Image (cartoon, rainbow, N blue to C red):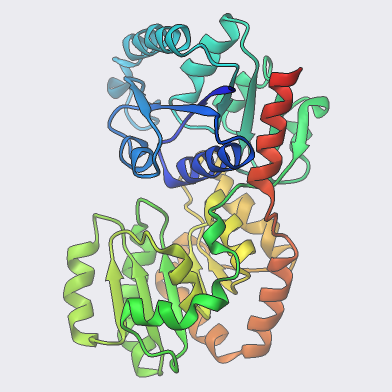
Length: 364
């Protein structure tokens, strides 16, 4: 019976690919025992148990780039996390470990390497994070979603798999009627889906808020995922547009959300980009400018350069986003072209391919 630890988290972009890999491993061999390791207080501590897997939290936190004082406790948290990670390894006795990025990956994979346990890294973005670049030295395999990743990792270790996403996003067209019923919207009206990532996105929220009347008056309806910080304001605004605007801080039924969407406005996190490719939706990407090494812009450009998405800079979103959205909604030929091109970049078997790589490490 294979025993596998999956470490990482912090955002949905790390957590959902990790769960997709776990599900694929279970499909291949239902007897596989899987343990997640995350960061205390982060969203994986809620989302992973909801997906049916046990998780242990480490007291690790990230480096705060804007405040030196906030980092004074980092060394102590790192030492505690390394100690706890070693305990987890000793108690669980995994055959292999997987790191998906996020705070908990570092201590857990370091502890695994000290015990001689092989590990695999899954890098979701087109620009590798500091932790993964460091961990790559001892990794047996590195699964990536974008070309030219040999600038960050040893070429001999790289496997191009794409990013794993939830299977329910495949064939969303078949769910269209059920999805409109779920959101209480009219299937005859073109629909914009607005998603700012698992944490929400202030610039996108404020841009949509300012242009909601324009969108509805032009004959469109909106599914708007706001994140926790903007939900109260958005609910107040949406009251003016009953039956035309659905608002939620978090959408669990993303298959339904993609099913109703004619056009999607989104951040450019790795998970969002991979889901858009699978769902084959015309997208306007607004990259989060403060993402490490501006990796969201690089993710977005990988689509834009293939005529597979449009890009609006975060700094220009309040002035331009509604106009670009309206222009795309009115241009069905452009929608069809973007949809066809983005679908060419999809990797529907990514989770299964990564699972096979993980099992190969055990056999080796």
